[in-house]
Image (tube, rainbow, N blue to C red; front, top):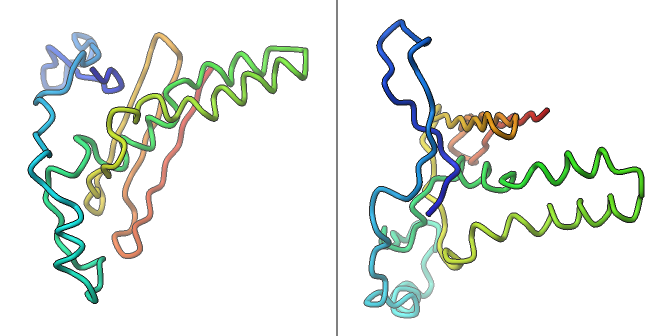
Length: 154
């Protein structure tokens, strides 16, 4: 299950003191069966066409959008915090290298699929109180697709 998204539970309008956050433990829907979709057939049927205009089956997409995917790249940001506190430069390099490859950990089972494109003005916020981490992103342009994001950690 993916545990990178905050859900706010028990919030009443105007009463943020009663709000608390809990992480989602699994995705709300199971992965779709993509065994009946042939990517080769789709490409063969569209030879000579502009592939950016070809509609792909929605089952080939990840169950996340690009803004969430950007946040997943920072899933193990505590490795950078540890690197900043380490006096040994070789150990610091190990922490930074581990962080660089950690982005692939969350996409191992989703290899070959792409995230959904966010709509213009869509935002995503991820707050991890236990790690002192906050991430916020917004889709600021549709053509070309540009996302603006900010992350901070203790």
